[in-house]
Amino acid sequence: MIMNIRKIGDPVLRTKAREVTLITDQTREILDNMAETMYAAPGVGLAAPQVGILQRLVVIDVGEEHGLFQLINPVITEYSEEKEIMEEGCLSVPGQEGGVLRSKAVTVKALDRDGKEIEIRAEGYLARAIQHEIDHLDGILFVDKVIAGE
Image 1 (cartoon, rainbow, N blue to C red):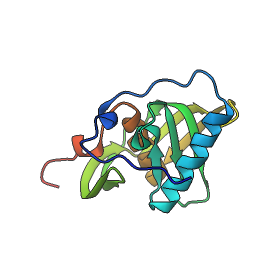
Image 2: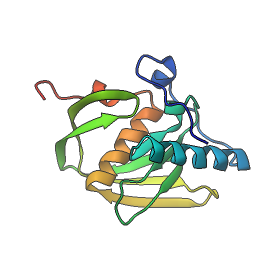
Image 3: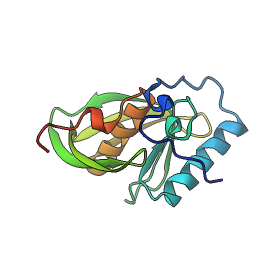
């Protein structure tokens, strides 16, 4: 089911999402609907607050060999010291792009759709997408981080 993507100005986008304490069939259905919505948009990532759900759920597919990630309660445990500025956009901020400074690589721990702990070491575009989507879970939008003059 395609969900409605909330746009900048919607207060839900500025609200910190709650940790998921119990993974149910409904949780998995939300993840599947989020993935369908992300692909239809089209986008490479979507966080639950972007569809009005204040839970720590993220879907990401940057089109590389990794395929679709469905992450529950993702936490970045390590950031590379090496950073870079790249242009970012967002499904919740249509028509706007800006340069954002982020770590080139991250390690993230999360639960998968079955509640199994996973760890992902990501670089490049995938690392950027993970950082962008986890920001959404904390009520942060990329426009808050755009480097002046970009």
